[in-house]
Amino acid sequence: MLEKEPSRTALAAAGHRAAHQVLEKGRIFADPLALKILGDEGEAAIRRSSDNPATRGMRFFIAARTKVAETALAEGVETRGVRQLVVLGAGLDTFAYRNPFEGRLRVFEVDHPATQAWKRRRLGEAGIGLPETLAFTPVDFERDSLLEALRAKGFDPAERSFFTWLGVVPYLTEAAIAATLRTIGGLAGGAEVVFDYSDPVATLSPAARAAHQERAARVAALGEPFLSYFEPAELHAQLATLGFARIEDIGPRGLLKRFVGPLPAALARRNRGGHVIFAATAQTPA
Ligand SMILES: C[S@@+](CC[C@H](N)C(=O)[O-])C[C@H]1O[C@@H](n2cnc3c(N)ncnc32)[C@H](O)[C@@H]1O
Image (cartoon, rainbow, N blue to C red):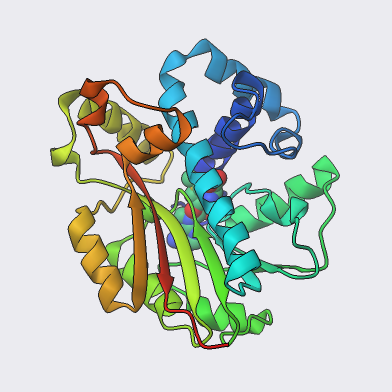
């Protein structure tokens, strides 16, 4: 991404979440701060979405991935002893400001320094207060040590942690992705992560490939090109070697089934596109 500019794709993703609150009434993912954090830009984001039916697929995917992440997080806190959340590449994510586990869950928001500074200004302008349990942690995944930056903000590697990493992996190099997964997989207290990724372009159906290429050109023009794609089986094998014992990969079919309902036969056969993955290291003995 551009060195000194806040992420434009972060604004676009937040626009999809805000539009989902209005156009689908937050049916998949309800976020009472999604519009507020956009301030004056909220109305325009909703208009762009309602005027353009082609945005529906991306809006669905963004709402679905966030719901998958927050559902797994809640289970992690309630049943697996998760005490720290790290929101990687947070953009305008609002979880920290509506954290239902205040007092039980510390939150670290990690983002590229320029995007994080921009978000902090926007939070002030929107009148969204900063909870005491939140620590802002500027990091460039391509250059910095994630663990060092987190430790400097009080992150405890010995406590079980949850990482969300939504809409970020496609924009990173494979080396930065591997380094981040190695850090998460190696944490002494155990860790869980939810992230999304795309199948290699050549494996998509012609219609999905055309839509993807159009999106790829758009984000490249914003200075944030897609850099990485994964073959699911290879990614799962890599995760296993990095210490992840439980891997649940929800492909396009699974997401539709979970959030839309039973699928027509033609759709049920297709499973290439965007995936959301939950991966967890083994539970440490209590
Ligand atoms: C599409 S936005 C997603 C934001 C948010 N997670 C969401 O779902 O709305 C991509 C995010 O990745 C961050 N990002 C991209 N490259 C990065 C890098 N090299 N280091 C740190 N953050 C990066 C951007 O700053 C931005 O916040």
